[in-house]
Image 1 (spheres, rainbow, N blue to C red):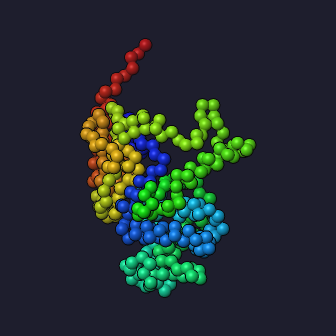
Image 2 (cartoon, rainbow, N blue to C red):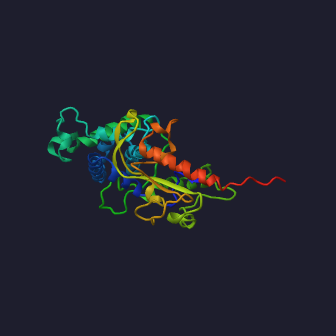
Image 3 (tube, rainbow, N blue to C red):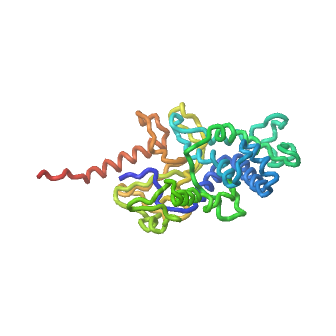
Length: 326
C-alpha cells in the first residue's frame, strides 16, 4: 500500500502548517505578510478603526473580527497547490505575493525596497488612519479574488502559533475556539430542531475531537510493510529537464510536520524497499502524484522518485500469490 498524501498525526491546532509557509516563502512576501497581519491585529483592537479597515477589504459590515481574520487567510492555502507541472499546478500564491509589493498611484517604484511602514509607503485609508501600501494591495487582492466570488466551500483550518509574540502570517484571532466554532454551532442548531450534523447510529460530533485515540494508532511512528511515506523538503531554483517548465522557486510541504518525516517531532528512519521512506527535494504537496506520459520529460527529481516507486512496487508484487482454486 502506498500512501502519498495523508498525515499520521492528528492535531487540534496545526499551527505548523502556516509556519512552514512563513519560513519557506519568498522573504519579501513573508515580511509583507508578517507586518501586514501585525498591523491588522492592532487596528482590530480599536473598534472605531476596525470598520475602516474592513471597508478597505470590501467587508465593512462584517461583524466578527475572527471572521475577518479568517477571510484574509484565504490566499495562504494556495501554497500547497504549487506543483512542478504548470498544467496541474497553480501560481495563485506567487501572484498574491507579487501583488503585495506592486506600487500604485503615488507610491514610488522603489517603495518595495523600503522598510515596512516607511513614510513614503504609507496610504491614508480614513481620517487619522494610514497603512502601508502592502495592506492596500492585500485588500485589493482579497476584494477581487475572494469577496467578489463568495460564497466559497474551500477551507484550510489552522490556528496561529501558540507563542503570541512569535512572527506570524495569520491573525492571532484564529484560535482553536474560533476554528472549532462551526462544529459547536452545528450541534446547537441540531438541538433547536434544525438538521445540521445530527447524531448517527454509531457516531456523533463530539465537543472536541479525541486526537489521543487517533494518535494511539501509530502517530509519527506509524509503519508497516508495503507502506510508503513520501514527502517534500527544501527550497531551491527548480530547473526542469523539459525547458517548458523553466526555472522556478519552490519550497517545503506544509503537511510534513504531521507526518513521520516531521523534522520537529518524528524520529528518522531507514529507507527500504519493504518500507520506503522518501523525500523529494524542493517538493511541496504530493508532487509524486503527477507525471508525464514520457518519464524522460519529467524534472530529474520527479523522474527519480517515479523510478523508485516503480522499483519498490515491482518488488512488492513478487510477494503476491494467486489464491488457490477451490
